[in-house]
Image (cartoon, rainbow, N blue to C red; front, side, top):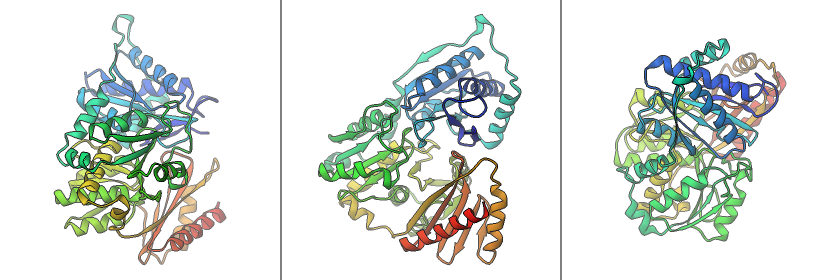
Length: 459
C-alpha cells in the first residue's frame, strides 16, 4: 500500500517496507519535516499533539514526540483526544502548530499524521508541498544535547473544549436538560467514548448508554459511520427505548444520528439540521462540498441566505467559508464547522447544536427529519490498482457525457436535470468515490451504477 500524501495528511498502513507504508522511519521523517517547517515560520517552538484510540497510536505518538523533542520543540501532549480538541488546543495554548495522530474513518491497520497551522487549521496544499519536499531531501537540523525540547502532558484541554461548546451562544443547556433525552452512543472503541459522554453530561443529559466503549482501537465494526455499519446502534436505540442514537468516527470530527425507531437520520442531514437551527438565529451564507446533499441549499434559501459549493476536503470548505463569510458549513459526511468556535469539523459542537434544535422543536428526532426534503444519495467507491491513470479515465467519461453540464473543479460532477453524480479520487484512500443524488433512491443507485460500469470498462 503506497503512502498517501494529501491535504488530509500523511497516512498509510502500519508495518511493511519504508516509503510504501507508514513505518517508524517514515513517521520520524515526516515529523522531522513538519517540525523543521514550523521552526522556519516563527520563533514559537510550542506544538500540540493528540491521538485517537488506534492500536498503533501509542507507538506513533512516541516516535512523533521524540522526533520533535530532538528538533528542540516544546511538545504539549493531549494523549487520547479528538481532532477538534487538538485544533482548539493549538489556539488555547498559542502554539505554532499541531499534529493529530488519526486515520479518521479508515480501518484499524491505518494511521496518519494530520498537520495543523498556528490557527489550529489544516495546512494548505502549498504548505504541505513544502513539508513533503523537506521530507524528501531530509534537510533536518537536530538540536544539540543542551537545546533539546521539553515535554508536557496535559489532558485537561478536552474539558476546556467541552466548556467552550457548552458556553457557546446558540447552545441551550436548559432546553436540552428539560427534554430528558435518553441517548445511546456508538463510540467505535475510540476516543468518542471519553469525549461524547463527558459532553452530554455537561449538557444535562443523565440517561446515557455507550456501546463499543473500550478504547482499544479494535473497532467493533468498520469505523466509517455509514448506515450499513450502524446496525448495532440502531438495534440498541430500539431496545433501550432511547430518544436517539449518536455515532462518531474514531477521531470525533464526523457525526450522525439514529432516530428513535432505529432508522437513520442520515449523515447528509446532520449538517442540514444544524444549519437550519443556526440560520434561524443568524442570517448568512452556507458552504458544503460538492459531494453533499442539495438539501443544505434548500434550507439556506428558506432562511434568505446564499449557498456556495466547494471542492471536497476540509481545507477547501474552510477556504470557501472564509471567502463568502459563511455562518455555518461543513461536509455531507457529518462534518459540522462552526466558524466562530473554530474552523474545523467538530462532532461535539454538532451534538450540542443538534440537541438544542431538537429540544426547541418539541418534536421527536424522526418528526424533525420529516420536516426536511427527501433526497436520496448513493455513495460508492471503486478500488484503484497501482498505476491506474484516473485522469485518462475521467477524460473519457467527460467525452461520453459531453452534452450534460459538467463541473471539473474537483474531479467530475455531471448534472442530469435535477439529479447529479460526482466522481473524484479520495484524499485518504486509493479509491475513486462515486456519489449520486436524486429525489428517488432507485434513480440515484442507477446513476451511480451506470458510472461505475463506465469506470470499470475504461480501467
